[in-house]
Image (cartoon, rainbow, N blue to C red; front, side):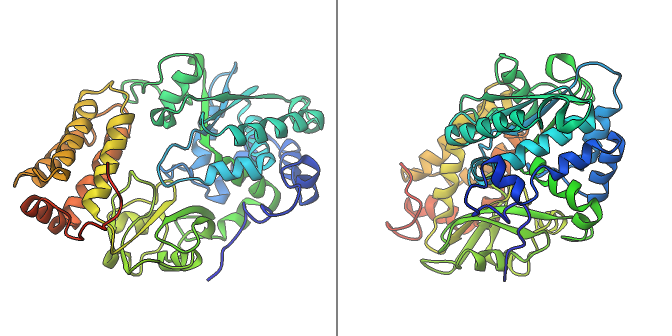
Length: 431
């Protein structure tokens, strides 16, 4: 069991966050190669790599880039979604903090390939240390000529800016992020077929590319080593490596980079194995994806198709591991509280449904659960799922519905006895 480090290969090298340290291990070779190529050829290299968006949806990266490139001439923008508000996920924070030049270089390559003249890094408001690291890296990149007029010795111009968010989970959704960046209320917008995609009409009505931190960080390696090299990693339909943020009841929580298709059991082994008891459940892709029982985790490969077939999603890679002292009802109560708090309130099903579910959980936690509460939670989830402008409603529904279906006996025990089936020492604590 071993990691396959591509993005994190040099994360422990002293001075890697400086431009000299980054250049010493091949940094900015990717952008220098990119500007020597035709922009369409750069996109073709990304296509050959099979890179999919690492923010959770897994959408082919080259399609977005090509869509932006194909629009009429005029201002166009590149945006890096560094909001990372998904519970259980902390990979983008480390990439920006330890390897900020890699992120800057990836965005610069995207700017050149799409013909954008300006880019923005939208950073979660709490990530002050990461933001400082990125700003220092940008200053150094300007001094060396990798940003600004004549970037990397080409005729192109690309300027980059940092924009700090205000701590809203909702602003991780791309249309809400754009609204926030433009100084508007951070709420989602209508999507096709009722409105154009951001690559057609995004920031200030102009074509806009939006990818997340990890996606951009992959690009310098693809340009430096070739798309075919990157495509040789992973599986037939899930190419490359993925950083998983492993947390919960493991001996060594942290970020681990593995080839897509690696068994979940191996990832947990890299993190030191389960502590405090036997494995009970895993949430493999951040709090918004369906929870898996221990038996469902057996033989599970971590790639997009395998996770989908198992009834969950690879998501953001926030892998949360739970031992057999975990009360799933308590866990989902905390999850419901989070989504009720973070709902922006624009869509009625999400605004009302998330609050309603949390009130039901509070009732169960007080010992006043009703016989129909579990079924009522599923019914509410079914009426939220797919009925909101953005995926926050889906994110609130999927984990709770799966928990009722896969751990129904715990809900029934809570309702019948007014207490946890695991006794007073069950985790997590819910206040």
